[in-house]
Image (cartoon, rainbow, N blue to C red):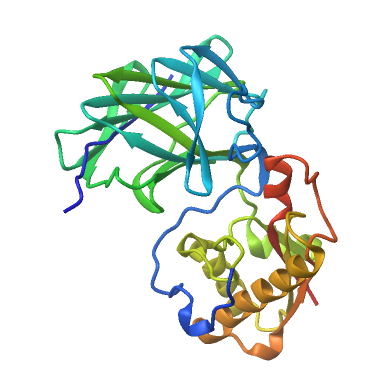
Length: 340
């Protein structure tokens, strides 16, 4: 039996082809988080060498170290420390995503601190505890006024995906793609600094970051298609080296399906794009299969007429960013929908 630990979240305002039948059932998934499209900051530590300082973070306090977790790398915090992503500002509407792994024997307290000028404008805190079997999710506003709380189980033997979505004064939090708290009329001042701070209560504990991403919130699909004829999304995700869709792709695909349903005359070209890792022929093949996978799900699960959808795989031939950094490669891995 897997051991469950406790997590509290506080918000303070101040490589194989898969068939359609093997794809996740996108119509039944209720996840609503849509990642922002314009990446402001991204790091998965894939280009970090052992012993090297993280180039995209400023480190203060105790040091951190790079650890391998299978094919994944994680920046591991072992003692009290703060990490500052190299970003200078966040837009009014933004998303934050992080994949974290806690090795907790007693208690770990991690904070995401969003600062405006010299004042903390927003703080999200994770309270991981080994003694409880449920996670506590709590939101606060200035002067520590509590907005609400919720309890849920989280299995810390596996990495956990956390997300925050700030959109037009609405603030939503997600754990593993599931929405837990949702509040409106929460107006933030312009954010100019973010701090990831960690505190440990007990020995032999660690907090590992496997991915951190900040992005400007996604535009509406129908509006973008009508205005520019093209919709670019980084929210349709696949297993590494595969055309199998990740379940967290459901919100974007559902949005595309609704747009097609609302506009019966809309026809789309689905373009698959990859980064430049690997050979050009393999990337071209992978991008074609991924575009076909998106079409297949729209046709088989959402009953879209196949004649309205065409596909093209472009591999790494049309990058929109450099392939020399994790952030650039993440930008280049995308799906584009073009009005025809």
